[in-house]
Amino acid sequence: MTIIQLIEEADRCVKCALCLPHCPTYQLVKNEAASPRGRIALMQAWLQDELPSNAQLYQHLDSCLMCRSCEGACPSGVKYGVLMDGVRRHRWQSWGRLARLRSRLLLMLLSNRRLPIVVRPLLHLYQMSSVSTLFRGWLPSWLKRVESMLPQLTAIKAIQPNYPTTQTQKRRVILFTGCISQLVEREVHQAAITLLNHLGCDVVIPDSQCCCGAMHRHAGDSSAAARLMVQNRAHLSDESFDALLFMASGCGAELAEQGGFSQPVRDISDYLLQLDWPDDLELQPLNARVVIHEPCSMFYGRFDRQAVPLLLQKIPQLQTVMFNNAPLCCGAAGSYMLTQSEMSHQLQRLKVEAVKKLQPDILVTTNTGCALQLRSGLREAGLNVEVLHPLQLIARQLSVT
Image (cartoon, rainbow, N blue to C red):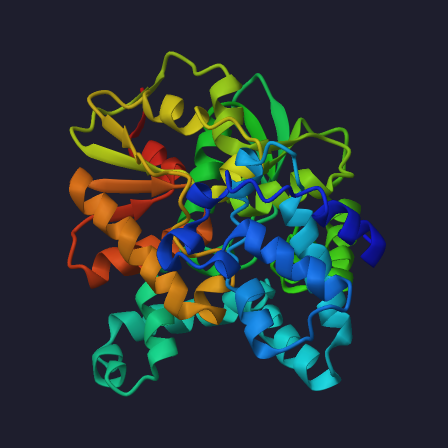
């Protein structure tokens, strides 16, 4: 959007305050500058050259999680996400080369699909050895935070490009595996492959796919985000496939909103529910209490929020509970957990306190960042709650007779 278009969109906000109860940062600090209508007012002034660029302005804008909970509450239908992305893009273009380089280096590290292939085995060895205990006390605070977010990595086989089903009734799907999930959620990928194969789906995982580009777009680097989306459209669009399936809701929201694929972009939980489950495929009972965490991207991505609860109902004896404050973000928000660590940590603690009150055995979530954030917070609080993707839980209880 041009500056004029952004100003016109911002002018649609009538400052009614209905968004305030839905904004996590405003709920924390009770500062209008940290609310949707406050940030819109700041953006209006900045776009019209009535407010200079400075660190305080950037801090108020950058403290936005982009959870977009405000959009659902807005009676005027202001496209807050589009507005914030547009302002960040214009700000990015005003930066010097060094500032853009620093941002691009961080995004490159987070979104590089090749790096996890090398890093994962090394991290597995690190976690299994006494070296991790010796070095932990010497790590800087930000690196300790990153380490605390990692799950216990296992020596799992590398993901292959093709996984044909042995069932007679066949469908063909493409699986989008993202970037950082290559490092921390390979078990989720394997669970997805197992379930899809058992339900009659040939699974293809193109090695040429890349990061969805959401982190780049939200950081203001729209040109990099566009390049990544063009590459994904070129290598993932194929109308001979039934669907392009995603496991992480953040990636799915970006793919679905940007569009341009030959086949529909589908949430894998919702897709699995639409398939015929054969009589010889049973799920073993599990007497456990599971809390379902809904990522913000499930809301603004407009995906079926009942898919995960309905899928988990297939496990006999399982008790599922939902958060009462589900719309409030856990504080992960992509790279936000690293770039705005203080605010992220405060939101993390609030969500962990909510988990503690529900007393679950397991927490499930469909977003990679949320899983990392919540796992870290639960460990810090000393709570013995396992954090899983719902597909992992389903695959764990799978029994073929």
